[in-house]
Image (cartoon, rainbow, N blue to C red; front, side, top):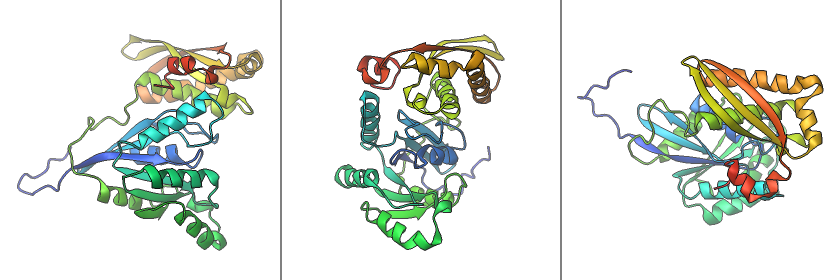
Length: 306
């Protein structure tokens, strides 16, 4: 830590909440992780990877920005989807700035328009319209695509970025800092997320299931941590259950001779070890929990609903 010279008047410290809102798969979690400099939200090519509101914290000498990564707003097909959309809507209530993230490489769709309408009606905070995936935008389409995105929402400012490449994120940060209210730090300076280690571990396991399975599996999966025991200062024992909705899915997640489950376990263990900073012994089970996405009781039990 470098010490500030007390004779030099430090500028006012700023702190506040920035909601990242958008349809599924536009890069919300990638953007938050890029700003925070740590993997606080899991990412996968599958839409609706993020299921709950996750806070990622960026602490600088002059400011603390709490990014609120929200589930993608979509037309829900089941109780889980509805709970996700409700969580995203309620995240709008208490924030200082909204980043409306769109896929800037293509024309907006009905989901984008629905979110723009929601923001115009419900949002009192300044809105930054951020067109992601600029690296994929064809030069011939720039004007038409940009104007179509401008028409989505009454924005305070706009920016074109690439979250995966980090392009223009510094400029977007300046736009955010300019609108952040004055205030003290709200979280300890070394904290990058408000999630417990158990919640992060469950998500890291689910991420590996998403990355290695396809078809109907990803959305049918939930992960619960059943055991968490620090056996030694440098060894944590974790027992977790991967829930699926049908027997056929259980077979896919386990794989021939248990190969798929072994691969998921090895990759997830490496990710969790990177977070906790020491050795992890990870035991995984796969169980069928029929229609867990349809029932409020199971969503509450899995922490996916208040």
